[in-house]
Length: 328
Image (cartoon, rainbow, N blue to C red):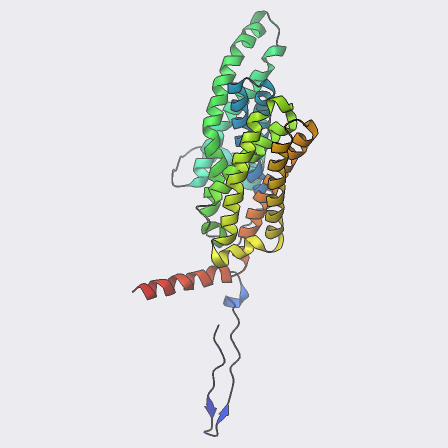
């Protein structure tokens, strides 16, 4: 960080060169403690987005009279939010900790807000999914009454889940940006956009996989919207942050995010061109789901890499101090 410095020894004109100082930190240790989260947290990020996107897909199928989309969206939303809860509880260590987080509500805490979002979304998604069993219930007696009541209740619950879906899709981006991890914290405007787009794309992927081409129209529109948001947000994360964009372009994170871009683009192209091909439509859906996984894991590993290297903490701090000093 400093260049060679010449000085004279004994007045004889001999110059002693001090070698350039290489960047390091105190005892070579990271300045910011890297997250101790394991694979279950990026998996939680993916399944939460999948649940949100699938619930929106279900409402789209409900409104447009596409029962295959409605049924698939409701069932996948319930399965994904259930998996999210399992991953979150596994990370917390004890199931009771999730219950304890419901004792208070702190709007300034993304984790507290997220817990309550799950508490609202999960039961609504569950009721909507259970309502899909109505056609198989007996027509008489108590089960007959349940069969008549469940469809309208399911429609209402589906709307509740859909209203909560945008918050479920984006709060994890706010949660990451609220940490001290440099490349997450600096990307606070982009992460919710990336996660929202990824959620829409993954929900669209479900629709493209399960629905006949004649019923996949809402899924195709979701795929285009989600892919646009995800690609634009990810591009900004990889280019806008200066030095803090480096972890998103290198190593494991860079490889995952590049794979996510390719899969997203391929999924959208296939969704648009495969309007008459069931196989192309399904392959496009799988590509969008895989892209969502790659993007979530890429964002996660990029942040972890920035926390482990002290330069991503110290250099931006010095740059901010220099700008403030220049302003004065």
